[in-house]
Length: 273
Image (cartoon, rainbow, N blue to C red):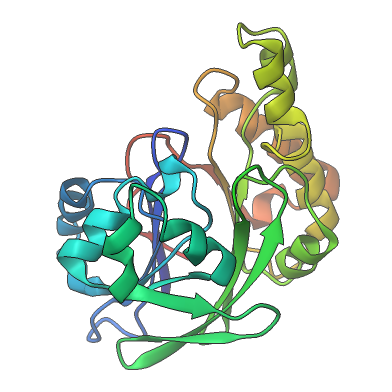
């Protein structure tokens, strides 16, 4: 069974755990996606479920904004786990003050346009990355396959692309950004330039854009939708949830899928997918 935990999701920090446990007798093993929480917080939240840092064998990185890599250098120095990212992103991380020299011995390159294999315990995870519009050096979504289960994560997405839609249409579980409510953003206190940065196509995805994407990619195999990276100032969990819930009602499938918002600064339970 596939299990998932969001440790933090938002501009304060982003970090997710995805693990596979074929049966109750086999230890849970998996990966982290991004490293925006401290090592202490990571250990504390894993410990609640009897887990340690040996439960993950690799770290995937979506992009080089600080809220996604804040503690990656520390993870590399203390845990010595391989860090998988695109070649372009690794080049940027080798120069970033938060990672720089610490990441060099942990660096593993993901190849573009093909399946990459990552050893996880006695199993193998397969992952493909796809580039999404965002104002970082390069921002990647991930299509992850664990023993026939398909997991797609797309965060910090200025606009969806045909490629991201193609992967999302195959997902059993989709983690998708629902960053802001348009009216809250436009009517809020942010400077005009920042508002345009957020909604201008290389920033973030609104609740309405997220809901429209869900309508475009819906298929019967989609069981879980997690709304991530909600803005503290321009959104509420209730507004984000309601927007995508309406889309599911219009599709006539609201009762057949789990829809959940991910908290900004606290961890979810360890969820069975």
